[in-house]
Amino acid sequence: MKKSLTCLLVAFWGLFSATAQTNVISGADRMPVYLPYLQNKAVAVFANQTSMVGPAHLVDTLLKSGVKVVKIFGPEHGFRGDADAGEHVSNAIDKKTGIPVISLYGDHKKPTADDLKDIDILIFDIQDVGVRFYTFISSLQYYLEAAIENHKPLLILDRPNPNGFYVDGPVLDMKYKSFVGMQPVPIVYGMTIGEYALMLAGENWLSEKANAINAYNITTQPTADTPFHVTVIKCKNYDHTTKYVLPVNPSPNLKQPQSIYLYPSTCFFEGTVMSEGRGTDHPFQIFGHPSLPKNLFSFTPMPNAGAKSSKCFNQLCYGWFVNGSNEAILQQLNNKIQLKYLLDAYALFPGKDSFFIAPKSGNMNDCFFNKLAGNNMLMQQIKTGVAEADIRKSWQPQLDAFKLVRKKYLLYKDFE
Image (cartoon, rainbow, N blue to C red; front, side, top):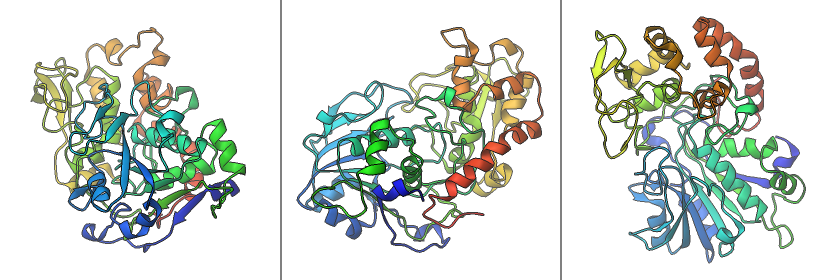
């Protein structure tokens, strides 16, 4: 790893072995390892509904262990994980614990110095799904920057990546940087949250101020003069061949393991007029539109607790339902993003000029689809009828380069 990575003190407990699902132990479950860091400290926790220690929430578990949790930060979907995608989440008081909750989504994505003035140490514990446009890794970056810039120790409690067994997709062109893609990584990057944090710091992808502190002022042996450090608490019995099934839904519209596996392939529909299945029982497995041929699978998206508003609500749609066991879906995907769903939908859609959602600016380079893809090339390839195999070939040089970067920061045995 690069010399600047010495700011990250990694807890290297655990075996590098692919094991059964029941034997995987998350960083959060390894409380004896990290509780000593928290004794007699004012603690802030960045968490959501996935932040579980066995059957109980991390915050509740810490409080029962005598830890002084004084502040909670919440990501997209909120601390309790019940807000829609993109829905504004306000600051609040958590009803169960009485602890203030600060939303780090919307205009306030990064903790300020004032947010952290009464905090001794920070914790990050959120279950990621290993996809670039899933916003938790963007939240991780801002949280890591704030910790470094304000000289606050940070514990990252690592969790397995349910899509951590392959790398695929176009690498982000930084011209299309946004909250759904902040770094030059492919759509599926094959890293845990802890590994990703190592890469952010090691490649100097943080803010200018955080990069300067990270590179020159931090050591792995904190002293009175250099008190700051970041510690990753590793998972045990996990590696990048493990097919990990999440015990808690990571967000309201990823309701099944199958939807998590399909999400890298079908989330592209968010940048089109097609329904991606929000308002059904199988978001990201079901997708379609009212104007597609009526001999296809039919469904009617309706408002529900995880999707109060979305495209095509209350309209009869025609499209596809990619269903099957976990194993069947994995076999169909074959460790790749599948473009056939998108290509087939575009081929059958009658009004091709309106398939991609146009931005308010009127400049199609600014459209949300390009932010998801990380470039403007994929849209043009689809419009001009480039074959899937040739689209995939266009990704390969940057994918190969990314894999060399990724290798430097892996904490667990790789899949290749």
